[in-house]
Image 1 (tube, rainbow, N blue to C red):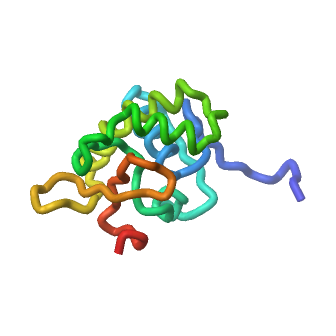
Image 2 (cartoon, rainbow, N blue to C red):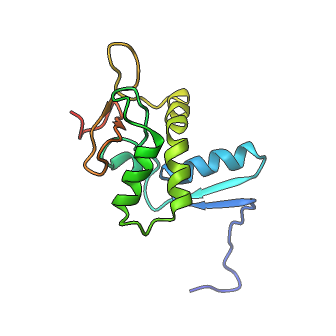
Length: 143
């Protein structure tokens, strides 16, 4: 029961992000970099979001295992996987920028499986015909 005596704690932020998965945390990083005061609200514990519990990889055309792997191939596979109802421009941006985001995640400390030549090790995915998926070094699906 709320009465006039009930006290509330108030926090002031410029940006409120709902969800602490990969996209939410990436948005928080970008907003903080722009100087915003950011709050992240999640229904689960930090680190237990779907991003961490997923297949164990990130769809990105790294082109380090198969030279036929390119952003155009990734774009094609993404559009086919979405039955061509995807927002094509968003799918294109994702396909073009995802390799850079994987490298960025590595710079921030994310661990991916490596080959003997120290390049990110990518494996096949059920969703993509050609695009390999850089696998998390802790991914249970890869083991």
